[in-house]
Amino acid sequence: MSKRITIIEGHPDPDTGRFHYALADAYHAGAQQAGHELRRVRLSTLDFPLLRSKHEWEEGVLPAALVEAQEAVRWADHLLILYPLWLGSMPALLKAFLEQVLRPGFAVTKTGSGGFGKRLLAGKSARIVVTMGMPALFYRWYFRAHSLKSLERNILKFCGISPVRECLIGLVDNRGDAWRKRWIEKMRALGHAGH
Image (tube, rainbow, N blue to C red; front, side, top):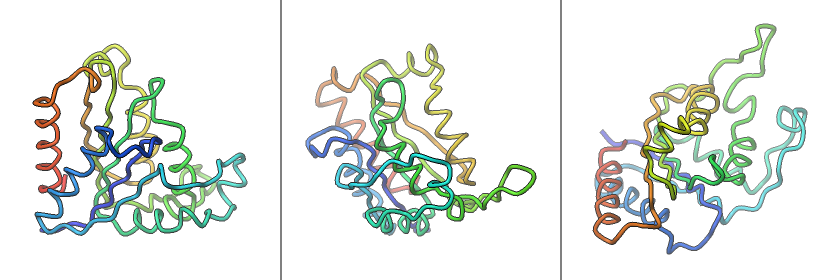
């Protein structure tokens, strides 16, 4: 069964020679081969302001540069979010993007007296792919993957996106071509399966 998939490329560097973009391209190729419909959002090409207040988040107007990206999230059955681990978390550009796009009225209803709104993105699934310089097991076990868990639980699942799956790819700067090709093939297979 074909899916509508939006790929969110969260690397701030526009250099498409990065391994990050090869992973996104492989997933896209596999998904396209399987007949899935695709949209891509490349954050490195977008220019938008940071949110600076709760009022701005709740009542402000979505910047014109993000209207198409927000529509791509709304349209999708499945999201693929890729980013490099920077200072133990997602890059600031990706966090700023999520704050802008996942506003009340789009991702959740505005809160009532109970403090929680309705999750408006229920029915969507996601996969998070994180690349990093350290060993992935070290990030998962020593650092407890705290930033990844925050993205899964406090952002995506808070909006109703579930299930959320993950791929942690460590030591990306110290690996050879054969290792990279295996990951590229894995991403192609995940795209083909729509996962």
